[in-house]
Image (cartoon, rainbow, N blue to C red; front, side, top):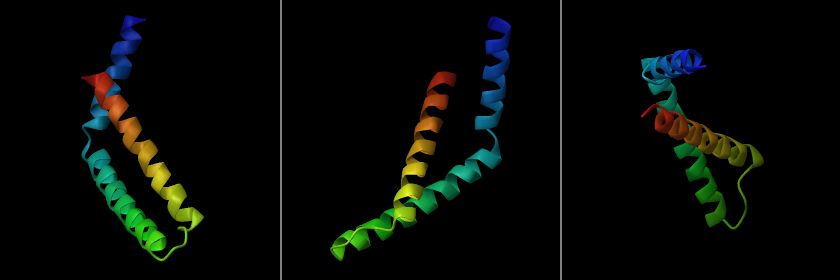
Length: 75
């Protein structure tokens, strides 16, 4: 069992230190910033943001949480 855990940990470490994952997370941050701006603008107008904006923003939050948990497990 320990060997399998070491294998998974090694793969996750390599994945999380990949430049592709770093670039993907940067794009996710930018998309989330846009969604937050759209949500703030909609609320300032007295309405609610489109469902797509809310879903994308929540998806970004889930991805941030997954990244946090994986990085916490690897440390």
